[in-house]
Length: 449
Image (cartoon, rainbow, N blue to C red; front, top):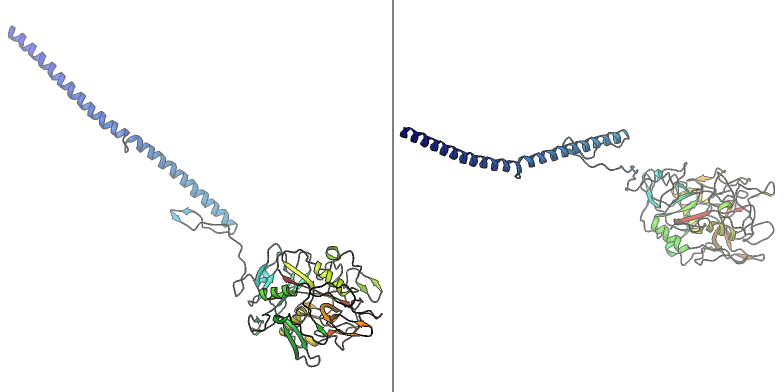
């Protein structure tokens, strides 16, 4: 009995020992498993971090997908507007980022904008060219006239914001050095030097030339020369001279050209504009001149501007663009007149320099058939005041102003394009040449600032 009881006690103790060991082992195992589990959950590569990473990757993927969809939608809209595709990442391939396309500007042979494409006036001064590569500078606020030629040979016409029109006179140089020749439509080239010229009235042969490089030593043709002083006429024995001859010549040197009034000046000319002698904008209150009709012997608004003195013609010409940021204007000087005539001659109208258009009828601005390279009436209609000075005099007094061009009532004597009328009175009352009459008008010239 005692042995049996001892075995039971021993077995009980043994069982308790085994249970305790099992417990300890279980605890150790649980601790190990806990450590592993905690590491799997909380470590950098644990379950929680992986869950966070998975969430972020999902959000990034959604955002990227939205961006791609937006880009595709934008490109689709652009393609519908004619702008084409090309922005962002599509299908995992990077494309060229799209920008709002700049309208294509037509270029000439030398890479400058084609002058014929300048159809709006809201711009600064543009150095352009014609389709032959000839330089044409369009001042700010000007645009191409609708009926302009496409080359300088045809005549490039520009107009300002109220429609005053000028023809671009291309100039090679001011010293006749053979540079910057003007290319004609047939590919041949000509040299046009800024200067004063004289031609034989019978043969049309060149009789004399003074290039602008020598303007400080004026050549006298007959009794006429271009004075370098700048003055406003203060008496009947002197003329108003060029406003800024040196500035004009330097502008032509830099820009290879200048602007020459397309028409003889007109007074309140409405849609048939002249070159800025519209009283509404430019005519000073002190000037009482009106366009004068010979037949009705009355002043008529909207017609050729005659019956004006040389000094007043110079005044309104200067005021035309007074304060303008892009151009200066003045009464045409002898360099402008003669070079414009040489330009027309060089463009194929060889004998035009000695032509005079007798018609017996005085026409309104731009209504005669006398037109070369889009320039009207150098050979006819009215003779025109210039800033050229004449020292000729007789018993009636001195005649300080030189008139240029043909006249509608006389085709002889000095009444031709390149002629200089310096030895006669300007009306039928014997007034000296600062007087006024119905057969004398004027034209405005301008240059780039």
